[in-house]
Length: 187
Image (tube, rainbow, N blue to C red; front, side, top):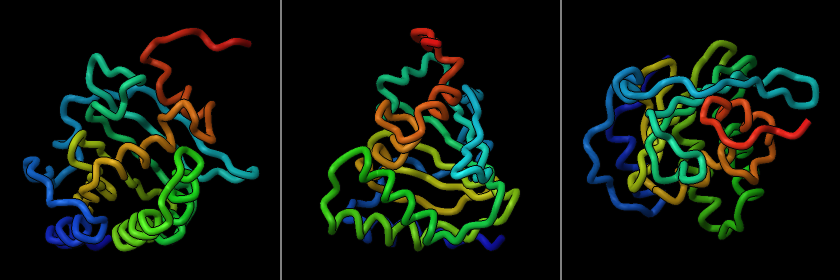
């Protein structure tokens, strides 16, 4: 899959209205971006009887799910079927709107940024996002640098799709955070 030039992150930062990040340059390989992180949990998303993707959450020791927005972590989606990047972006915005009220202009900018960044995925492709608090979301495809959306508000809400207590997929969230402890689930 072709990689996008590094300057795409600057263009996306301007598109979403945020300043270019003062954070260190992103790691070109996912393994470097997640070097201190371990697998917390995994789950398969099924929608209307179709297998969509397998999700894996990578966190550092001491990760607190109640404050996920304040900590660095990675979320990998291994696709089980093909999707257009624009369709992934559209569905992401729909899910984000289920978590918080979005200004229509902001939603449009975020959707455009994701559509410009997310590639068409095929079965077996892995799209991984890394939340960098205070900076935004960095993305990798099949372990290689893809680009970033340098907007902390976007990143918090985007990853809330999977990690917020208000997620539309509470069982998937539970499976992702299973190793973090917390109260046992009622039968």
